[in-house]
Image 1 (tube, rainbow, N blue to C red):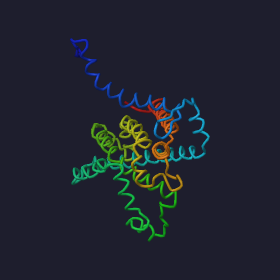
Image 2: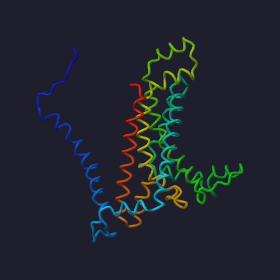
Image 3: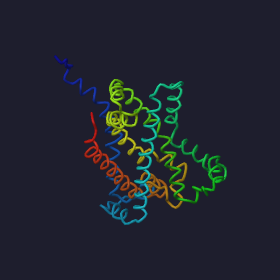
Image 4: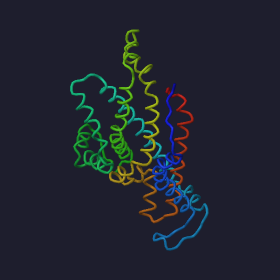
Length: 293
């Protein structure tokens, strides 16, 4: 017979949920509603003059060719960061799950990068790949590669992708390692007895059993690439050169904080929020079907 927990006090469940609901309302729904309302307004930089302009901010936004370039940059950047960070983290987790000498130290060192702030991570990678002073940049030039992210937009995009990927690998590594350790060893041993090679065992047994973890991390990494990489881009490239690394979240800051276009910036934030919600809904609608729980 299954045991069930019963609350004798009818209001106790609501009291337990109240703190979390307050946090969600204050830090998500209220700022989101403010952004939606502000996107219909035309304000000066000091907020002294306000005019209700309906959808003019959105119309003006989608009439800018640069905005579509920024949108393309964001999708390329997000796809690359999500794919690389998940792939590398999964590889490291598989290696760490084996019986190796010093495995504890190995796992600890892999977790450390997650404690580094995004802005600090951006500065570290910028120092290493600075065209004239960076050690790794000098190594690339010695190999005949004309590395210069300050002038070449492709080099700058590669640099911010590497920094953002490095920052997120530790987070993915933790979840993949926990998922691997939760898989019963008897299942893998039975496949090995049946003659399945390690590569086949991974793709037919281990990876399908990791699908819930992989799906969760895919959603989290897409959100990370869209929002949490602002500090990396701001410290490394500032959206340059020639807006080659400007993403949607950085353009919101660029136009709102630096450009003083509060209404247009609010419209951009609403569009960004809609894009992320739509991508998350698509992932739950189509990708979750292939998840084996």
